[in-house]
Image 1 (cartoon, rainbow, N blue to C red):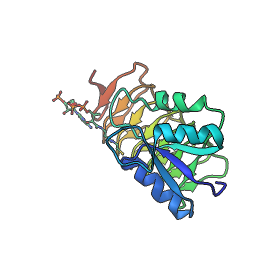
Image 2: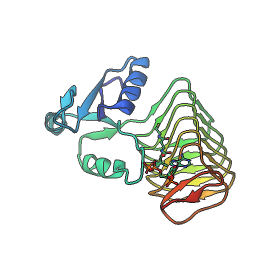
Image 3: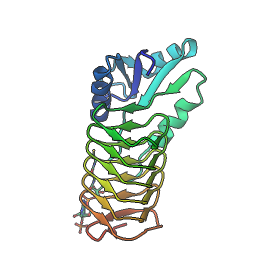
Image 4: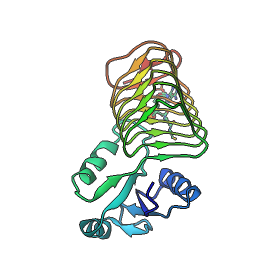
Length: 205
Ligand SMILES: CC(C)(COP(=O)(O)OP(=O)(O)OC[C@H]1O[C@@H](n2cnc3c(N)ncnc32)[C@H](O)[C@@H]1OP(=O)(O)O)[C@@H](O)C(=O)NCCC(=O)NCCS
């Protein structure tokens, strides 16, 4: 981080978590609100005017809770802007092995653990206490929620949600644009997009 203000897209729960993390590093954080009714530090149109004149650091502060997450669409809109730089935030209590790769704009939460040779794509959330075991790959925009475990050599596709306390067994793959319900256990590779719940996880729709 270069000490400049970090602008957080959104002002809901995940945005507050990011702001807290910035403040631990003594970096100022401001919310950009996408909704008229909320109480942002700066509204989106004023932010975009600011970005026309200045280089700005940005991170996506909107999580995903269900299918049809639009985290990728929000980033698409911002990433065409010449002055926008995406910031990666790693909570000071996260444990990251030395050879881990973390993409632009991702957040690694408090107490999260990233084991050797794991890779986290761009604009991902590895939330509080989640564990990404060795050789695993988490693709762009995916949210691995609090307390989830992706065991060794597992893969999660783009823009998916791995619900809180879910487990992906070793070497299993989970598709993109999909949800694994809270507490569910993925015991074998799935390739069809959709919502999977239970233990063993089955496709609900
Ligand atoms: C899976 C999930 C997205 C489904 O939400 P939804 O689309 O609103 O679906 P519903 O609550 O209507 O449930 C649909 C069915 O799936 C079942 N179901 C939902 N979540 C389940 C879960 N986690 N484990 C097992 N079954 C589950 C419901 O019992 C229901 O079954 P039924 O059709 O037999 O009655 C949601 O329950 C979930 O687990 N979200 C993850 C939240 C999370 O971890 N957020 C992270 C924030 S940091």
